[in-house]
Amino acid sequence: MSEELPLKPKEVHLYKRGQLDVAPAQPKTPTMKLSAIGVLLSAGATFLLYVASAHPLNTTSDGLSVEARAVHASAPPNCFPALGFKMPSSIPSSLNNWWCDYSTEYAFVGVSYEITACQSLDTLKREFADELTLVSPSNNVIEAAWSAGIGVHALIWFGFDGSTIYKSRRDALFSVLKSNAKAKFVTRTVQFGSEPLYDWAIGAQDLANEVKSAKSSLSSLGIPITVSEMAYGYQVRQNDGSMDVLKAIDFVDAHMLPFFSQQASTEGSMSTPPPDTIDAAKNSWPIVMTDLNWFLNNAGGKKIYLSQVRNCRSNFPGITELTTKFFQNGWPSVTSSGVQPNSPNAVANVQNEQDYYDLLDSHCSDFKSMKGGGVGWFAHIYSDNQEPGYGIYGTNGQLKIRFSPKTSC
Image: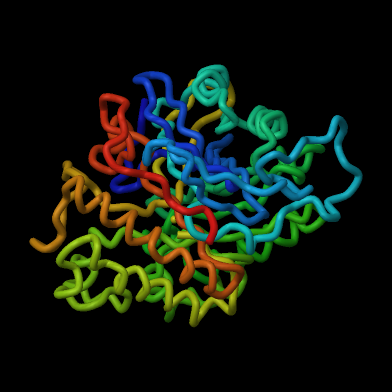
């Protein structure tokens, strides 16, 4: 049965850089082609699958509807996991010139897709047959990623109780990565999360040591290590050694939900501007930039993505949990039991959801110019069926908003 964890939805990132073709989907038949792909789950860990773009894109004006606007690209580069990249018929002998550069992953990079139901591999293959995403526990996710030509971000879930159960999840994941010859060619990173510092799930110095140990353990595979966390998590744990964590990680996964920013302000968060800047989603750029600036000023020029997790029980033999991570970033159109504003100025409606994504899209050049090769952002979430209010699609399977963000500029 599902284990409900507050404010940490179970999702996948649809994450394919290179073409954006968002067409109205039919109910029960998602056909959203996005510039990014993601899935997270595991044998106690999680996986994010994605495809990146490593080439310039140009928006066309060929008569397509706004919702179905296609962003076409020049010939894709010969690197993984760029749009159009052809997977080799056999496993390469080396990672040399394999991965696309992080600098190609800025502005819009994808959308989260919930896997609360712990869908089977066949189900996800059926629902995402249009080059989006495939997911399954353990080796199956590696095989699916290889088959689809998509990359994987794997997350090790800590939980909230400070237990050491994460160690068995870590060991299970590492075993898969080391035993499957394809793993290092599709696994972009391993993450610890979600929000382990903010949740006090582990001591900050212990987390830093876990990151360092993981980097050592996976060094022969060339897999980077990071932590899924918000700025406030690092800030509130500085006396506990959180800056050692930030120093140890290879790049930053930053959570961004300005709709809740007023709550942080009343609690004295160092990462939230004054309340009068939160009167609408279209005015939330100062909130976004406050947290981003903290990372830009403290992360040593590392790559940044805007990011969060929930988990679900699995029916697969030998798998105790499937955990999904996603880059959580958005503004809800409605409130729900777990989604309540912390200021009367933070209004949940479709217009504010639209305004927030338009706001991010309007800052493509700003994201591109930021340290670390630019900042990439994910939309939260694919459908209101998956997370009430946050969906790009409504419960009827139709687009709620205009959604054709830039994948490059």
